[in-house]
Length: 396
Image 1 (cartoon, rainbow, N blue to C red):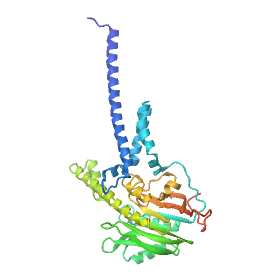
Image 2: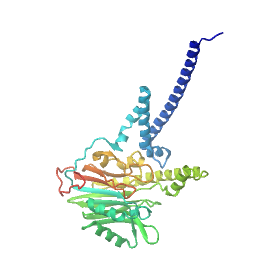
Image 3: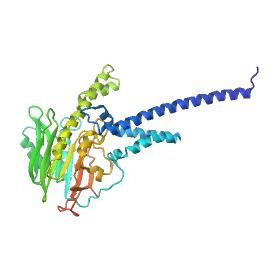
Image 4: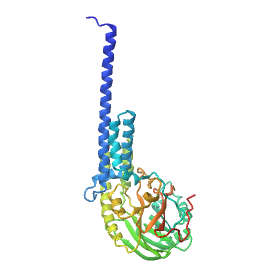
């Protein structure tokens, strides 16, 4: 039988079209499978805030990665839109819509901050031991002090404070560098023969009581300080909760991923997971302990510091319960406060209760530490104008 040229051409064209359709279906099915997995991960991240990681830590991993899981789902929506598969785009779109409140805890799309009048300016800053052990950043000590003096907050809460030698001498030097008459509350633990590190609350307002919350078996620290601001007494909780302690495996893992060492990467991945799990569980116990203490406070409270956990976490949900988040109430843009070796995230907070109103919130983009300083401006809810007349030097 003779096949005419036209029929032969149509035959091969049909085969090519069929092959192309098969490839498209395969690609679409792969994308759909990836999309479903990403949505499931997103839902687990949503649930992680309700699951105590001291009991079950696995979901907390996805809460930690939430910003990036959410971003991946946004990418999937865009891919389906470009492919004009609108019904598939709804898979991630609906999942993101369900958790829109989570997004708002990381990014604020409207600016409600109006820093015209305030009674109190509070700054929190993890200073990473003044970079004493960072090889490429040993000249930032004086820059940090200049920044703190320039900002001149009424209350300053530091985490990872470090001093070599006599602590009293170090405290005096810090007060001299910041200038003015200051009241202090330090909590330090030994780090070597002649060094100490810890947290510090420094204020120009009188301190009437100092206390701390002990976290057994941990170097994590929490102090509370009763401070008289004008005629009002506030209780300030300064926290540095359990870190993940990943540095001992981080460098090795990265070199292995780069191909320098191939035999032990799984051991290091297991070590990282173990460190993450222990960090989640320890913080869960610590935040429960701190929250119980906060609920006994006879004064309005401000709870600040480095929580070492994101807004999509059990730690944040428990600590924020009954309190407002200064960034959520008065911040603008992305709220990421960590800028270190791991992916950027939001782990530093200023929380407060109903007796106060946050008029503005700043994340100071100073690259001296692996954390950015954060600042909140407050006034009492029953006051229309500030009694101290403080004004921000940053707002124009």
